Image (tube, rainbow, N blue to C red; front, top):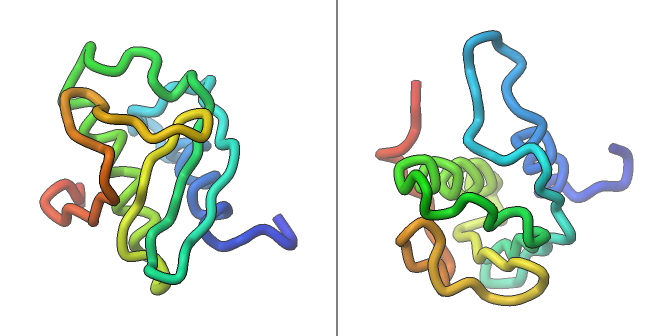
Length: 113
């Protein structure tokens, strides 16, 4: 959308899911992005609503893919080096058994080609 930050446009495109039949994204459809911003150190803070945590831990592999789909996507931008996850404005200790209380850097091992 006109006037939106590139980070928001990219994340909203990711959240809308793939356009190719047979592909899926491990993001719950009901989550809502509240806000995001990038600080001068290149950390993109992504603030989701509480629905982001729904189902977390039920499938740790899915959680990891979800998390790094977000991190790897945003870190493609020149001004983003890492992503810090917030839920309802609060830091989250863990997500799917992974510590997420620090900025997460991209993981190229989780790129699917």
